[in-house]
Image (cartoon, rainbow, N blue to C red):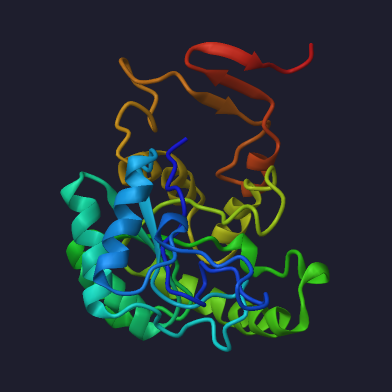
Length: 271
């Protein structure tokens, strides 16, 4: 695991717990809720003090929260630079939750290492991401209607708007030359369904081989763990196998029948 601690965002924003009476569940920098440079420095440093190996910042509003729009920017350029520069000073990368044009561009200009979700991403942002070597982590499966039955009306309305924009944004990103790493946003749907992401990536225009590379080579590169992601001498022997050919049918990756962890077989097909 590569933990980030609390995600960092503004008071009342996507990282905050809203909807309670004043004085109830009021959060601060230690819980990632920070306004202004001084509080953001404390928030970043506190997460790293307690083991964060990556920092996540909420550059924009989001879907699964109660802001009116899912794409409004939520930190100033100076605030975003503060988060990125402080994390990098400590050798830690920053992942930016971002939707829409303005907030995504601000995160990219600030120098984050990855953009999570990227719905509504502009061609300008894609070009700058390519130039800077910034990864996109698409989280496509979560935008296919999962979990609608448990959402409050305000969130459901935003979810449907985001879902409608997701495929076009992803297809445009996949046609570009930016780097893409696999991610799922699991937690918005039950853990264990993560492999369903592959089929949606392929349906929306990614080659099956590129989807697999995103989950192995590219993910290892983004996370800074060069000891895995490829089968080669000297690397961790973390290997899975599936029945059939996932290059012909990406849903095969949902049917893991063999698992090797560190060279030890922990799951094998029943004879």
